[in-house]
Length: 114
Length: 113
Image (cartoon, rainbow over all chains, first blue to last red):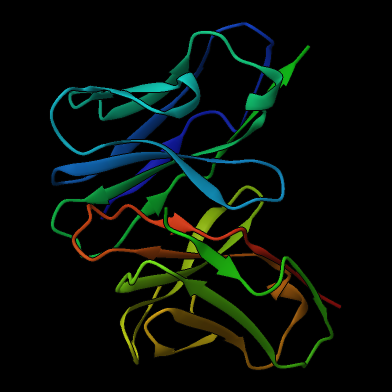
């Protein structure tokens, strides 16, 4: 069965600093990987996804993530954060061939301070 | 763009009441989902539906039921609400065969007193 571990529950950073949110997954088969963002009192919005091909994936709002198969990781990065990036970020994994199941990590709260 | 709407953003109910949470999607997606979200626990799947009148239990179905009479609408039912069902409820939809990318509604924050 697949599982996802987000290594940091909270990440505080200053505005314009770089940030990395860490995600590791476990699966016995090939996977699809996703990062979602949730702004306060809102639903989840897809930031980016890895399906196949290039291991560096670019998403919305200047975020990118790199798929590392050997380390079973899918870390999210942004070179310079803004106050408006304050939100909760969820990593999710789905096994290829599964008909629906998306397994979520427990989330990382990113707080950007002025 | 896919739009998933939920009938209420905030809901307050009393213990023992029957509660209906409604979700509607406008993109003809086959698959629809109900999750609950609690601090420190992430999202947990309650029920899933892959077609009209078809449903499967997720990871935490106890205390919940669902109804899908039309393709675009998926309802979550709390037969007798309890305080431990106070939570954020998120609905999602997904096109079958689309790499499991799910589209989410804005959520309903339910408080059971």
